[in-house]
Length: 183
Image (cartoon, rainbow, N blue to C red; front, side, top):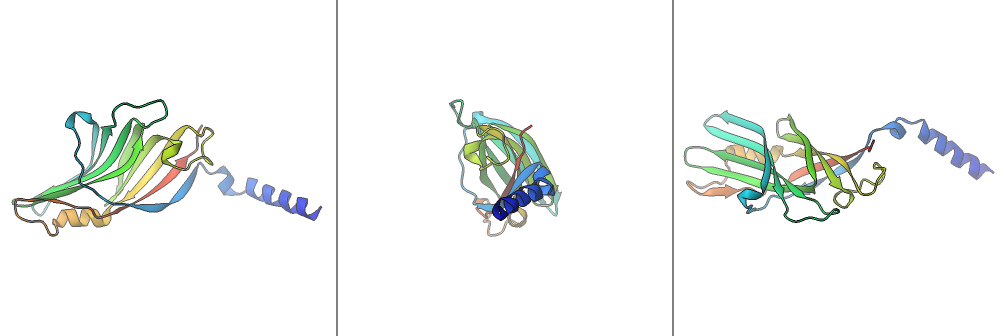
């Protein structure tokens, strides 16, 4: 009897806690390393510029690029989202490409503060563990938060870049995500 009362008390406590009414489930950050990426230009579906900053002779650009993945089925992602950076000065240039996620749709994106970017995606369950937040185990929305402050600082300064040679930066970024409740 005490066991059942305790269970009932736990359930009631949960039901009336703020967490029970939250609209999302948050997950701890993970590291994503940059890579040298070759993309067929015709497969680029969308490019979103988040930053274009001309400062002290450097022209830093940060954005998201949506790339078509080719043929897909009704349960495979249609596109990939990359975080890209690029900077050029008179003799130096460099940048990075980070595969952030496979997805179906980029719903929105923004720069939340210097070096930190957000994107809301429509994705399949296989890409993120959102079964606790979504009514369907099939598809839903996630809000990504990408902390690229160290990366953008290196790209801004073009550290270790050589004259007239493109420098590819692979500095990891931190990505955390929030599973948005399905309606």
